[in-house]
Length: 88
Image 1 (spheres, helix red, strand yellow):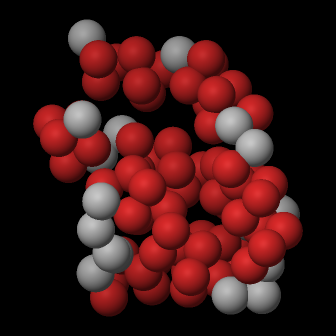
Image 2 (cartoon, one colour; image 1 turned 120 degrees about the vertical axis):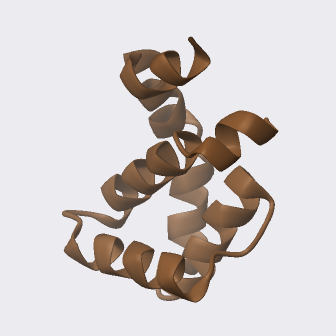
Image 3 (spheres, one colour; image 1 turned 45 degrees about the horizontal axis):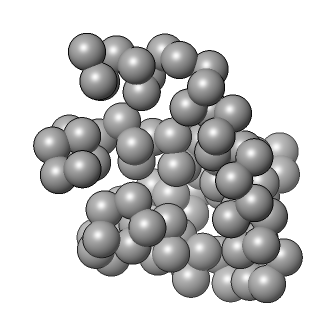
């Protein structure tokens, strides 16, 4: 039930968007995408991303319309991983 809630409830997206953390992170470290990605992994999964995870995240952020939108997507995806659901 928890995984369905995380995947489908608009409240989750709203909480991510309105947390203020993404705005602060992007404002303070906008030029260092690698560090932003690392911070997302540390916050969500309490570890650094693997090389392949970091590369996929970097590609996503480069293709996103804005850094904020890309980070919102990235955090939502991390929150829907088995690793997050089973460890949180």
